[in-house]
Image (cartoon, rainbow, N blue to C red; front, side, top):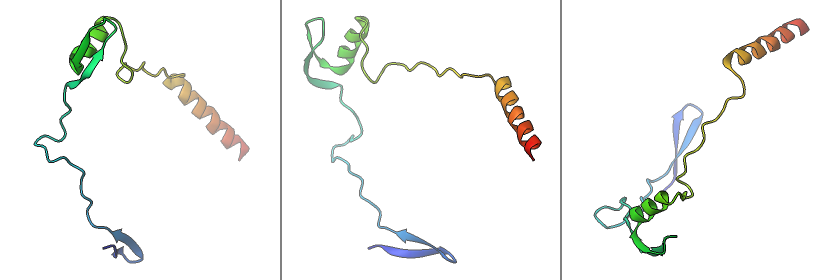
Length: 97
């Protein structure tokens, strides 16, 4: 049942019943298994273990999509350049007033 609650004078919130969390009846519902269907790696062998499949792929120089390391962002300007730009904008605003 949805009802309105007055939080403070003139401010209202909708109170909703708590939602059920979708969860398995298994003892460890948040654990991801290491097993998978037999999958062929580029070395011609089939693997049923995700960790072994990834290990062989890394040893062959392959990159698994989604697990590659991102390059760090390079900032275009230094802190001194930012401060100089801000000061220049401030001076221009002051001159226009």
